[in-house]
Length: 305
Image (cartoon, rainbow, N blue to C red; front, side, top):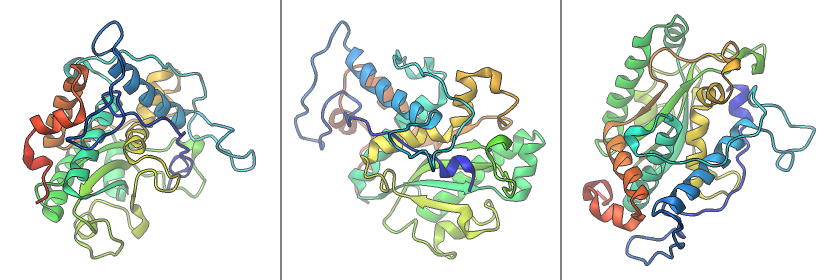
């Protein structure tokens, strides 16, 4: 586990839904806030606040959440972050952490409606894959993407969806004993019990060829469980955490020599999930709320099997 993995300190934030209302089950009436100058302004403001809080929790230490005895920097960046964000349509959005956050919301609703489990995961890559990434082999990222897609579906079925970001902890923040391997942080949904510990459970068994040697090189957790945070908001924070190296460099390009970035694309959203996240993102900007988006979407994605 990297230093950054051990020092994530999400901050508590209000739990508005993506449409700016209190979170409701499909079919219940949502209490919406009054719009201001333009229809999507409230939506953008709420979503922007969630993302800004997520970025701040990842890239800055908070003395209110950790004592001076155990506080340790989790990134090389400590500076004020922009709070105001003007969300754009999906095709105009360049920030991958915004797209991952949109996909995290969709994953939450898929899991909730199917009564599936919703987990964060960390997969530390094996020595060979990590070496290929170190050497700038872009095909390693493509291989990882293809193998994750094939192996997750083989273990959990075609309804399984996931997202992740690839990263490597900077040397300045790593213990001397750290292997400093490339690893992925992601979110995944699956049937009850899919993340159960045990070397020979289906998903763990099928991912063995991608991960490192230790059993702990593949870890699953329930978003926000340790800190008793709302599941969906914690998932959005984790989406930002999954791309924290790229986010750090975007906010401070001068740190490029300190952080490693993988060759090729750093993030991945499974194909069906990406299409649905695209639809939700633009639908929310148009003023739609979760029950409407679920009702208008492919019902197979939101129905128990």
